[in-house]
Image (cartoon, rainbow over all chains, first blue to last red; front, side):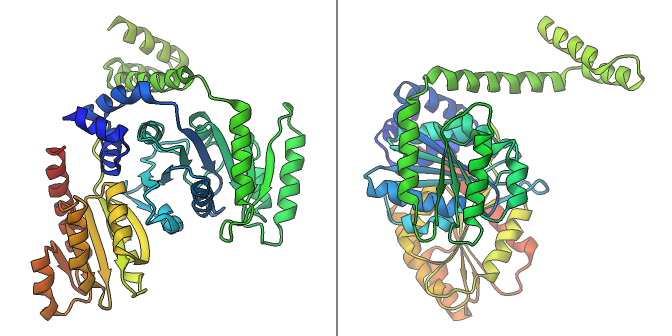
Length: 304
Length: 140
């Protein structure tokens, strides 16, 4: 049953890819089987992450970038993450609204995901869903984060190349994010560069890069996603980073994924542990400090 | 295994650009805890089918304030041809009574008229989504 789905996925059938993504998204046993079966075939696609503040034009720029990749003969998968409501848990997934020019192109597969309260800008399963697109034969897989502020840097760990998209005139925002996502950028883009303050923003970003302790060459580009201006240069810059960095050893990512899964399990065990309530009251009464209580919990976990 | 919330596509086909209603319904469904893929108006049928497939949606909602609903039988046929016949299609907006039978005959699962309440829409879409998901899970 699953074997045939895996075969169809590896052949690149869109229906099989869509179904496999749902299986992985819901962390089902079937999703785990699929990932295990395709794991030896992974590592062919290049993963490009797009992040940046809300309204910078990430989705529109991704749409334009996809168009450029299609011109260059690449097949493309897009994972677009939008935030889940902290109140209802629901989400409006509206990123593909900005990518309608690819609505009829079989060489482009777009999947919207809700963040499900996951911190980091992506969704819990996003990196494994990128693997499924890799397995389905996509040459490039694009991960678009939710509108990001300061600490949504996970995309840099998941993607091979991280593109950080800014918009002109957000002077204070540039200040605010400079200790966070700007530091993970392999390529920095000032989108909406037809707006008056674009040049100043670009100069500010360049100046910020020069202040960094570790001097790295980060391209600072200008794009206008709506007209397509600068998008070919963006594609070239991403290619250049990819060529310079080479392929990361697959073990690095896998180790992180396994460690995260293990950490989630340990956390669930700790939360369900009977000692937790007793230790918590002891801390509340001032008999115990938090670090000692935590150490006691970890010891108790080892004795299970 | 974690539950995925019902995933609903809210879209408009045809030439009518009045998308206020579809936005309100999208917000209703979001506030009921569902994931809503929202596209805005002027979508073409092949694009809607491709989207439905890629997103693995549970229910497809068409908002129609002019005559867009007359395209819905064509959409349902295109879904079936793409192997997506299991996805329930619902229509909301202005549907004259004399045009309802044709939509029902084409397989439209529910029609919401002006005045349909938030509760009614959320309950029916949620019910259809659960049925569709259960049917798919036994499959493939």
